[in-house]
Image (cartoon, rainbow over all chains, first blue to last red):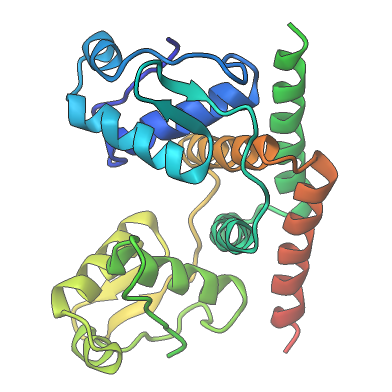
Length: 129
Length: 129
């Protein structure tokens, strides 16, 4: 898979793994219904602990991005999670912090929005291939 | 101060404290040059450990949001940190994850941008008072 773990950063490995799988689904590198490597396989491939992969898979299952079948293992859900009230709250909290930080540093609305726009466009572009 | 700690969430307390101080600076609740409560005072006020306040203050000092004077204690920096290459990378990484997650859940570009816009507008509004 396309996973790249940064062992130097403060972000926990399971969180990096979780984020990269969600990013992979968004840009279409992982398709709905697609089977993911087994916990053991992925742990070996990227040189991390079994439990770390397991933790990421379980969080993704609980959030609705993956389903876990006892025989087939982890697969990308056919039905993605929705925009719940709870998700929206969390998203706004995160954005409030990022925007406040950027605002203090002198980034104005247009600059911030254009970064968001180009990330959305990148995802759309990658989906075309 | 306006700090509200959520003891139920996964986010470390020092990180919550750090974020709220940056948000306070952005919206003008904390002015440049303003003195912050002493470590001891703030720890007492919000019922957390001295070391936790100390950790948040030190991170904010290292990032350039606060200066720490041996006699006067912590103050909001007169000169805010800049948009460095490193900050921009970090910001893009965070946004890439938030956008991917929202994209999977069916939020389109316009919806995401309009949330960002309204957060920026809120900050601008609060600055007027």
